[in-house]
Amino acid sequence: MKTGKVYLVGAGPGDEKLMTVRGMECLRQADTIVYDRLANPRLLTYAKPGAEFIYCGKLPKRHTLRQEGINALLVEKAKEGKNVVRLKGGDPAVFGRVGEEAAELAASGIAYEIVPGITAGIAAPAYAGIPVTHREYGTTFAMVTGHDKSIDGRPSIHWPSLARGIDTIAFYMGVSNLPYICEQLIMHGKSPETPIALIRWGTMGRQQTLEGTLETIVKKVAESDFTNPAIIIVGEIVTLREKIKWYEKKPLFGRQILVVRTGGVAGRIAEALLDQGADVIEYPYFFTRPTCGEKAEEVFARIGMFERILFTSPDSAAFFFKVFFESGRDIRSMQAQLYTLSGRTKKKLRALGLASEDAASMAGEGKLLIVGDTSSLSDEKRYRAAWGGCEMLAVYEKEESKEYGKRMLWLLQEENVDTVIFPSAASVRTLTDSLSRSGMRVDDVLSTAEIVCMGEKSAQAAKEAGYHVEHILRSPNLDDLVAYLTNK
Ligand code: SAH
Image (cartoon, rainbow, N blue to C red; front, side, top):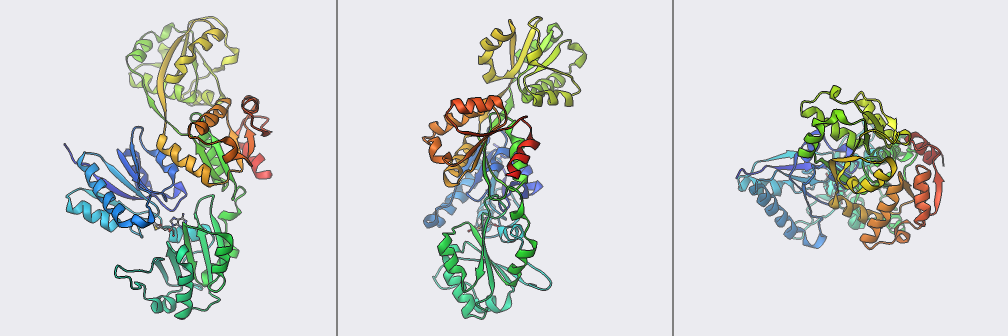
């Protein structure tokens, strides 16, 4: 069997869009993805359907043992012929142990690449309005571990050089060691008034920044129970933040919004809200893959006989025509009037150069083909009741990404969601079901959240399910949603 290759990829600091194009390319083709806590779980949705996920969140006390296990795992998976992505927060070479992993791969004769990423020590300050160098405020910059212990237990940092020689210092993994760090810096020559900032979950909507001086910060951190993961940034440069902070000024910064999805629809909502600075939990996520086989071929062969074709979702239109054209057929073999259940599906068809009508206006006559996913086949009875005899064709299947779902449920428990968006009636059931399946109660995770529904149908479903609906959009479009949330 051919041995696979291992890509040691930097996932970037948090914001999913800060991953490199090369990293994304590797992620999309990977068979196995080994990732840890700092990599944004949203990145998992870029994997190909059926990819294997292995979580190796580090447990602090078992550091070494875990690392050996990970090294061995990478070798083992590559030997099974898998292309592996080892996805690491930030840059894999900055306190990311890439050296150990690469050495192990080299020793085992396994091919690998290192794909750099944007490191948190630069990106988190940038998103907090602190450039790490500046002609007037800082001409030297160092990235330093906050664990000041070498293997023999003695300090591994040369504190006098650091305190006197470097203008701006970024400490990684340093929050629990903060008192010691401040003490050492003051003792070796930095002024107690030196500005310092802590940035937690930098570059994500959850970002929090705490400022102080070497003398005051320890008390402030204790009072606000600020925890990891955070970058500690020390230097005069921190004072620039007041003037140039930008991310924290975005309209939805600080908001935690749950967008419930049932298919592809919610994706754009999440994207728009992220862009406004919100922290978005988008849940659940479905992989889609085509299922067209002989059945589709057989239907295509007599496509001219259908007088009406109903597409039940945007994906149904996309997959149908993809396969239709790939099989070498000509659009002119179709005679049917096309119908859709939603404006998004209509748009998808429009993009393919095809006009369609709203299914509500569909006459009850003429041979009808309904195109959907495998789960919509079970709705045949309902369709028959509405439009009489019909034939069903499933062109794709949806499969929930369990790995992504697990991470999102963790987040729901850890974070404080303040707004829930139901884009459709089906999304209401999706949320209630998946919470109860994972043993969580809606009241526990969403007790203080405001419920926003994209339309009357979703509002009705939400009310029936016992949610207190705070706002219903007059028309279900993204601009109105963003306007409503940002104007509050
Ligand atoms: N390879 C990573 C660093 C891993 S060490 C990188 O290049 O960024 C883990 C430490 O990184 C954390 O303890 C924290 O100090 C820092 N860190 C990682 N992501 C962070 C983020 N989004 N915000 C703030 N600090 C972060």
